[in-house]
Structures are given as structure tokens and as C-alpha cells.
Length: 286
Image 1 (cartoon, rainbow, N blue to C red):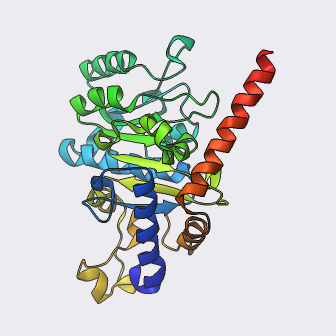
Image 2: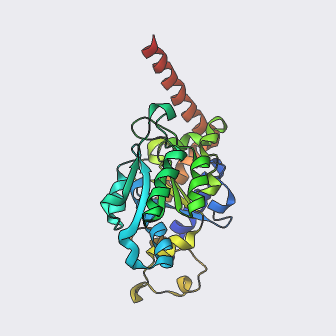
Image 3: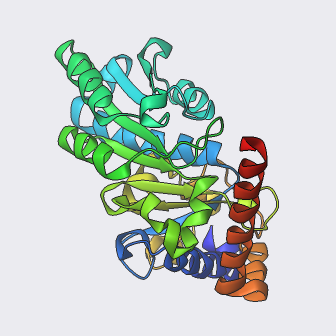
């Protein structure tokens, strides 16, 4: 909790907002606004904790007896950790939808496919709490359209998470920022600086639009962790934003990278890699 290391917590809140500003995220995802973020170990944990929050948001309305009726959505390109996290969250494996993609859509998830699947599942009595979209899939670097998928997700009132573990880093460059268009309509976003922003494992930034939903799903308050600061609700206890209770001073490495390189140099780093990728593409085509 905050009392165990105030400096670690406060610095984490600062660097999370710094990176959010670099990504031009809305204030609804920032501590300086109505949202907030936390450094998870990997995107696997980011997906798990947001899935649990989305699950509990629905079950609080329908009752926990409906756990077996929950159905969650990703695509056949979504990272395999989505399936693992769904199982850990108690989702029936037969209710984990990995919707098909095709070359025609650049292997991105089609909103039409999603809407069709949702309509069929709801009609059969299933309850949808969660959608995982991806910005930069592992196999093909496919980019799901956040805006069009949000049209569907928001219509059904389900938690929409955007897994931008790899591709999201490119969005610190203005010319690639449109990959996150519509992010203000998502409920959460994760990005892993250990993939493309010069950090090392483990460093995954997770932003949530309504932190209270995450905290309500994950908080535990045993007597041995009680303290006046936490009880006053004037501080952030990151133990309630993650699976574990203990955590390392992960914000320090991100602070050092951002302070050492600065925004312009990090953007140059991304652009250099994109340029090299285009060169390699040219070699292959020729």
C-alpha cells in the first residue's frame, strides 16, 4: 500500500501521466483527470485484472449465479493470454469467443463479426461482460479499429479493453496516433514499454477510465494492512490495482528512460525502427 513506499507510489502516478500525455490520452485515463493507471508486470496481468473488473461489474447487476453464463470476446489474433486470463476469471472455456479474422480486413476484428456474435449469444441467454481489442497483434501486427468496435461494445454496455502492448508505443509519434482513435470510448488500455520503449521486463502500463471498478474488484483490507492514510481515501494503494500485494519500484526505470531520452529521442527511436522495417520490406519485395 501507499504507506509502505510513498515515493514509489507518487512517482508511479507521475510517470503514468507523463506517458499518457505522450500518447495524447484523454484526461479520463489520467490521475490529473478522473482516471488513472498502474504499472503491471505484463499485459497478461493487465488483461486479467480488467477482465475481473468487467466481470464483477456485470455480476453486481445480474448476480454471481450467472457466472457460468458469461461470454467474452477477442479475435483469433488476440494474444493467447486472453484465453488464459478468461479461464482464471472463471469464464467457461466454451464461452470464450475467438472471432475469425481474414486478410480482407488485415486480420483485424470486424465490428460486423462482433455484432453478429454478440446478438446471437445474448439471444441464447448468455451475458457479455468483456471485449479485448488489439493494437498490434503478435502474429501479424494487425490493428483493430477501436472506434468501430466501441460502437458495438458501448451499445451492449460491455468493458472494452485495448491491448496495445506492442503497437501502442508507436502512438507517441503523431503520425501513428490515429491507431488509438476512439480510445476515449474504451474502458482500459495497456501498453508495454519493455517491448518498444527501451525498458526491460517487467513493465506494462495499464490505464483505466474508472479506477473504482478495478479497485472494487481487487481490493482486500486485512487488519495488518490498515493505516490512516488508506482509510482516509486520500492516497492510492496500488495493491488494489493488481493481483499481488507486494510490488517493486518499477516506476523508477520508466522515469529514468523518459528523463534520459526525452520525448523527441523516443520518437526518433520508433521512427528509426519503422524506417528499417520498410527497408527490409523493400529488400523482400525486390
